[in-house]
Length: 405
Image (cartoon, rainbow, N blue to C red; front, side, top):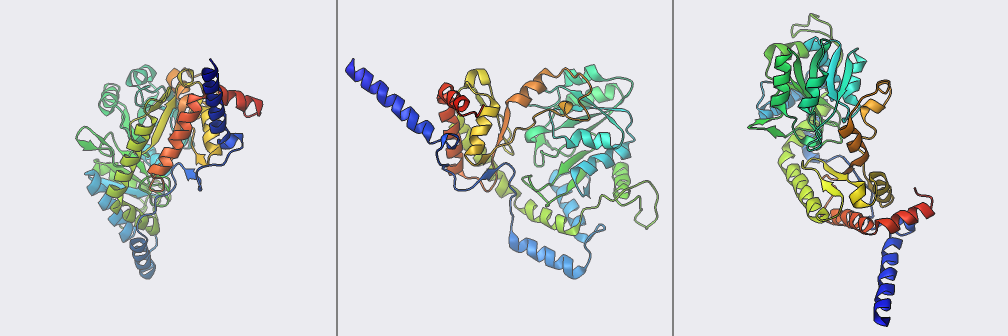
């Protein structure tokens, strides 16, 4: 009996020491630097400097210069798509596409996405109609999409979330039955595929982001990909105030051009795609290995983003509580997407019934992964997660006592 009591005391003491090591309880972080979600990959400095020098010497800094055209051709070749139209960012790319397709009234889209998706539509007078998503892949649920089609619907806008493609065939079938346009926000999906085709070949067109936080970036920028030659011609005019190649204004347009320097960075990063893809895949595998067996923690497939879903009942801890602990440890996690777009102004004036979206908004957490994150970092992050889930009741009690909850 005395031995059992001693073992219990030792166990309690060890638990206390382990929890005392957490920063939120006064300990010191095992990480010497802050790890971010989407910290920019750097690429090859020398190649970029070479391209930048050429641009400056040429004194052609924007207006569809040779580097932009090379970037468009390189992306089109990689995607095996007929046309790529480079633009200043993906949000503007979506707006150009909405205009070019002549969309009106309502566009069905997910609420579980970055707010740029509905903002792009609302900014030009379209009405986002939010649809629920599939719990398995977090993309539009075609069954729910069909329920939302009305005479005012003009398009279905799918978002390839976490790099995982939407149910392209099912959404396309719905669009065909109701004579709707189907387009895709592929901001997170560069390099992804569906069936035997690269993402970028589906719907009327797809829009990619090359924002600094993406695996492949151009500082800031985007590309619209399409196999529709007439649509491509219209988009090229619209991104440059409606000017034709002969310099005559032929249509309504705006200034959505991508600068040469951004295109140069895009070319640099494209050369790094294979290397960065291997790093991202290896990081996902490391996370999978170390997160395996932790109650209530599910890692979502899709190597470009490290997304975990926290089941509070099984884990004994909420997503927000776990996020708070990790942030204190210099792990700058992101609660994507919380709240959902339907809960943000100016969209929160309708009572949407989106149970899966609501659940995911409370459960999803994105962890750091880029060329700046290595296996040591991942081991530290996952060890913290394993520790706080193992001792969840004690951790929560301490957080309550310290006013952290």
